[in-house]
Length: 236
Image 1: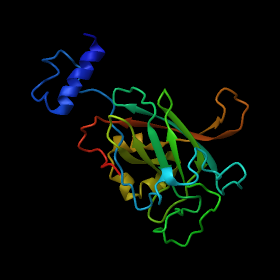
Image 2: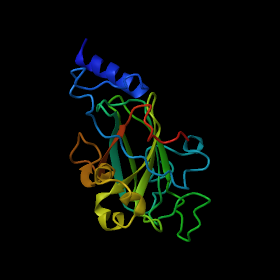
Image 3: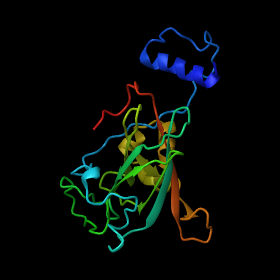
Image 4: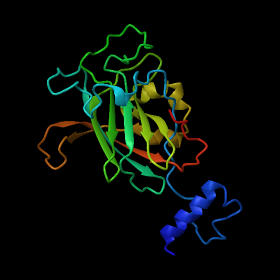
């Protein structure tokens, strides 16, 4: 039996509870307890879109405008590229990646957001994307503004077959001062904070053409845990 096959069978036993009492030594598998740490669960917050994203009129991967004929939203444009993998670092394809965020003023498009900051009628506020065969996803958006009491962030909901649903948030390395004052961010362990904090670097939009338009670009790697993970997000 191949090592990868044995790894799958043993982990399946452990996750199902049938492997209680098994040790990695007894199976000769020093890697049994190894693997990537699953991305931390974070609060969904009160502003998940109504109706849900898949029922909205616009939810493509360009949040900077509603459609090709619409004006461009206010704010600094950025690109977020990323991937969804399991904790063996295997890419997961056809995974639903939902994102939602505030516009450049820090205002959400949600009836419960009652702060007095103006909304942007040209900003899409959310997107729903499927990962490719290599687990990758990408979207173009606006650097989110600072919502009262929070550091700038982007919300994510990840739905994949045979994995627990994950709701989490992504933060920006450049906002370290605000991040350190954010209770939700600081409740994470140092390792977890590092995994959800993204550095932005100017890169060409077309990676095959270095002369194409450049925008600040970050990479967010999302790691899903086993299906029986007790710390997983309760499905929405």
